[in-house]
Image (cartoon, rainbow, N blue to C red; front, top):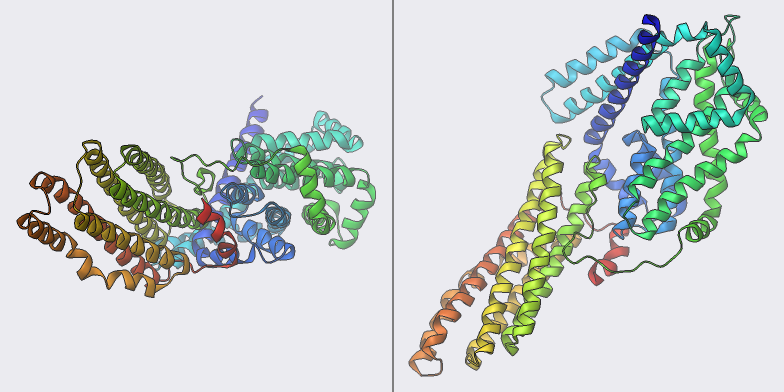
Length: 574
């Protein structure tokens, strides 16, 4: 009983260390390679081959095909990626995830603790953030192998257990049992890389003859296929509540792995011989870890090569499995882009935050235009519509603030990413305040219309022109955000003097009209309140432009890449 518990907890402990090391390495890689990962976004739309390459590269950094697939689902749901494009990225993700198994197959047992120590020194004593991130990656890499060694050590007694040997014999003789076992293991652990690591370690245990593997390559391949099927469940769960195309993206991931596994299940003996032929030669227990890694890579590589020219067919299949059209309806008080599933990938999460800021800028510009129309027509019903729009914007703002707070508190942002996130938070705060001021101006105009009162034509013209000036500044702000155009931001800042003088100038004109009897004194309080709102809106626009110019100067506003340009019209329509 004691030995059984030691094996169970040793295996679980080793697995825990392995998964922790893998996640820590992913975090370190993301921090170290953050700027380069931004460039991957520009690759995604060029063609399916580049999409596959981008998926493989991103997955190699994230150390998880599930994480990449969840990211892609978020992009599809936000309307930033089309279905064929997403499928090509997923094909690449399945190739990228094999990198972990290839790393595990290296025999570096004697180097593990030096690697851990070097990583610790770099992270603990490094002054620059890049050195610290590099140290975290190296330390996590060593920790990953500590988990592997621990699992390997506790598995040795299993090789001499008659019960376990007999069970493995059944799995080897009945491949479908191996597929089910691999699927269940990955469902429980939620990481195919972890279950494949367990499989590699277990296969390295010698059978009764001391030379051959307890399970052999032909017994390991079905479990490997099951691992690939099990990893699709995470994506399916992430697609719940998302758009139809997001669900189709998750289903495409499942179709890819299930169809590939079904085909390879029938050719296991020949597949095993091919893997043995391309892998290093030697005693089976010495080379089987590399053989399993090669089988994993070959399976996903061949499967990708088969499906790459058939992406159009994959699209038809998932459209059939998930029928119906996108509703095209947006929830007005909910963000259009941010996705809580992407909090763990800050580079891509910040990219979506930027999209949300741009969308909020366009939304508030329309609200200001509506407020101008209300002031001109003084319709109480239109005033209520502006008020509702402002409340919806406030709802979006609230969720975005919550999202960015979670992102900031997760402790996975670099100093630059944290500063950039804080800048976007400031932009959203200022944008939301402009919406509030618009609602207040519309409410005053609607209330005066309800009472049958009228402002003078000159006053209405001045307010209308001032609101148009705000809309123009918001348009220039949008251009600065879209294009990374410092000049557009500077155009707003050049209007600082004029914008800051609006309240004083218009109030002076109002008093002149009072003297001439063109305006009624009872309008002064309402007019003053409107001017205060305009003054705040102008200050908000100037503040936004200042932050954007600084961000562009520091190259944190990403210039429009091809993917952004292709979605520009869609974002504007929203």
